[in-house]
Structures are given as C-alpha cells and as structure tokens.
Amino acid sequence: MSLETYIDGLSLSKAPSTGRLLRKGSREDLPLSAGPDAWVDVGSLLSFVSGVDTGDRSDILFSLQLAQRAADAACDRFAQTRTWYSKYNEVLEAVGWITEQFAFAGHDQTEGDFRMDKAALSIISAIATVNQLQGITASISALENLIEGDDAMTLFDSYATAGLSGNFQIGAVQKAQSGALSMALGAFYFRASSQRRKFLFAKWGRNDVNFWTSAQKMTFNTLIYANIRSAVQKRLGRQSADFIAKLVIA
Image (cartoon, rainbow, N blue to C red):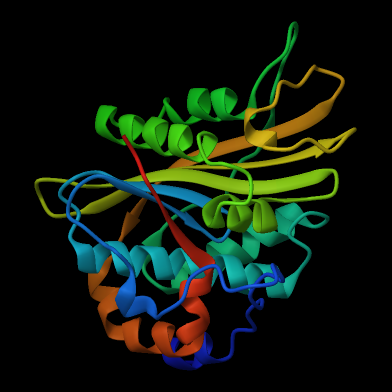
C-alpha cells in the first residue's frame, strides 16, 4: 500500500461542536512567522523556536493534526488511551516522524498539591533544550492567561479533556544547525475524581487524580513529508483550520 493510499484511507474525527467555527478561513490563512510562536493544535500545545521555517511549521502542525484526528476516529481518546497513542504513533511514523512508543509512568505526588502544567514541565525538561523549554514555558503561560471562552482555550478543552478524564500533549520544535527538525514532546493523560475548569492549572491533591506522563524526542523527515504533503492536505480538507488556534506569547 502506498503512503498516499494509507493517508486517503484514514478515518478522521470531525470538528468540535462548539456552536461556531473556531477559525474562519483556510490553512493558507494561518498567521505563521519565523519567530517564536505557539499554537493549540487539536489537543496539543505546540511551540516553535525561532528559526523554524514557516513552511516547516505548517507541515508539522498538520502532521500532528492528522495523527490526532486519526487516533480520535479509531478509538476513544479518553477511555482507550494506550490504544489511542499506538494509532497516534503509527500515523506520525507514516508521515515522516521518527518516534518510539510512549512509555507512560504514573506521577508520584507523595505530599502536597501539584499542578499538571508544572508536572509536565518537569518531565519535558529532561529531554528539551534550553530554547525548547523556554518556548514551552511561554506557551503554557499564554494558555493560562486566556479568558474563558477564548477560541484557543475552547479548542484545547474540547480535545484535551472530557468528563473526569484528559489526554493532551505539550511540545516544542527546534531546527538544528544541520537543518534537522526535532521536537521535544510530552504526552499526558489523567483520571480525576472531579471536574475542574482550566484543569492544567488547577491544584490537585494526591487523592484527586491519577496522572500519567511520558516524553520523547522526535525527528521530522521533511523529505518523506514533502512527497505526501498534498495527500495530507487533501485528507484534512479546508476544515483543518478549525482545529488550530494561535496563542499570543510574551
């Protein structure tokens, strides 16, 4: 089976039922730049370090969208999380990402409260460069500062959490001097005893939530993706822009 046939055969989740389009326009309208920026991409929070080309940013955003929407269509994002990540990785590898299966471990909170954003930063810091970590920190702060009802917050909440469960990713992409594109990506999911607004920034006690974490570095093969870019864009369709929202970072 060719990659084009594989991509064309993927079932994808539909746009969230938020009562209105999160973005109006098409993928060509995305306000991409060469400086540091951050995005909500379905249930992922993604930042780019300065120096990543705008074309590469677009390719990365849509490759991650394809993987998430295909995994969402294949199984329940929240009830079948390990299976979801298996499909997610399968699609990422097909479109040019060099990745491994996520090895999840339970977050050990022995005393006091914790915030998921702080715990996520701690996990990602073990694999991220200084610039990537700065980008992730800025993107998390930008998300935290959004008012309730903001398009980006609405999009993130629509895909990162449902009821008492959550499943989300946080990452940053950097371009090396060699031209290689690498992403430090943390993957997280949880089961909670109660629903909380802005769950990422709420304080949780050890008995309030079970929180699982994983992180890995991935490399993006732009040559592979260049050959299937049109197939990915065709499969996502014009609706693809409804799954992406830009964050304003300081």
